[in-house]
Length: 190
Image 1 (cartoon, rainbow, N blue to C red):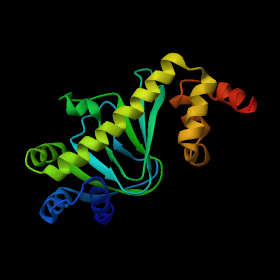
Image 2 (image 1 turned 90 degrees about the vertical axis):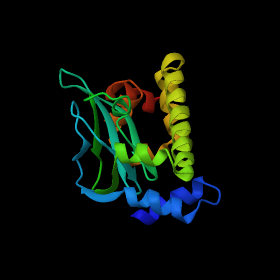
Image 3 (image 1 turned 180 degrees about the vertical axis):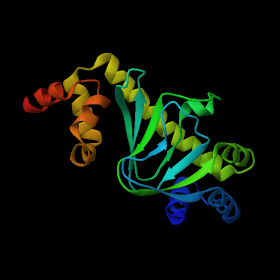
Image 4 (image 1 turned 60 degrees about the horizontal axis):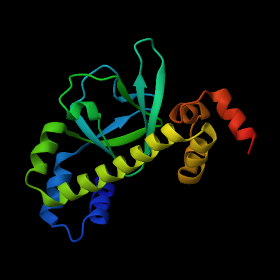
C-alpha cells in the first residue's frame, strides 16, 4: 500500500529526498474498509486525511431531509479529505463512502499540517493535488453554470468514461445535476 504512495510522490516531485519520502510514509497507517462503509460519516467530524492507492470512494453531500447528492467520485492515486475540516468546522454534511472493499492510508490532519511546515516534497505533492482538484472543480462549476445536461454528460463521457462503466448511473446523474430519468433521455439521444 505505501509503495503506491511512494510511487505517487516520486511521480509528482523531481528528485525528492529519501528522508522526505520516509517522513511522509511514516504519517500514514493502513485501514481496511468494506463496500458501503464510510471513511467519513455525514454530519460528523473527521480528523483524517486519506490516500486512496486503489479503488474508489464517493463524496456525498447529505441534506437534512435525507436526500443525497453525489458530488464526486475519487479513484486510484488520490488524497481524500473533508474540505470543511480544513477550515476548522466541527462537522459537515459531506460523507465519504467506499464504493468497494479497499484499504486507505490514513493520517491525522494535525500531523499532516505539521509535516507540511518542514517537508518540501510533501508541500509539492499537496500543492499539485490541490491544483488538480481546483481545476476539476472549476470545470465542473463552469459546466453547471453554462452547460446543458447533454454537455455535462458529454464532459463525463469524454473525460471520465470509466465512471460510466464502473458505477451506477444514478451516481453519474447526481454528479451532473439531473435525475436518472433525465440521464436516460440524454443517453438515448446519442
